[in-house]
Length: 224
Image (cartoon, rainbow, N blue to C red):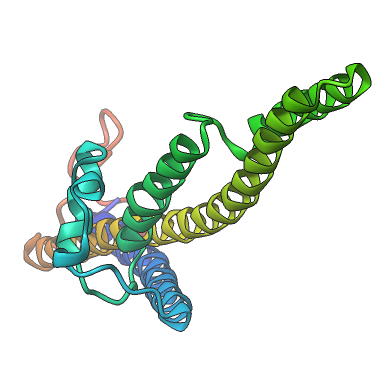
């Protein structure tokens, strides 16, 4: 086979691969653009605004290491996945944690409060059966506090979960953008290599052969 022919075949194949990589890259770039715009539109529609820096409490600013993001986004309208994560993990959950402590159930969640309410109901029933009004009233008071807190936890965990889902969707979009950039770079590399192959084919003497059988000499096979 002539070397020029081989170079041309490889260069043509490289261009086809480059085209495929470019198509995939552009498709992923489109997915990234869709995810970014969708997240922005949906979050902006909720009109959630971060508290301004002067209204943030010391507890909100230092609840956990990541709480500093509340200062970073202070006063801003929520429009990005990163903002959604910050609000869910460090604002909503800090308030849920504080509410649990205030109600007398530190560390409890919506799910764990279910069994607590069941136990308190049993305590109220048992106290009433014994005629212990004071114990029944105390258990009933704790039951009411647990019920109110559970409603608060349900609302907080639902909103927090939805915001974190949006954040996850945004992360997928960012990964698609990264993959798109890599594919487009590879496509550009393949175009460069294919162009180099075509140039090499052009400057290679027509009579130069490759994969010549042993003993065939330099004679070009017919039809090559």
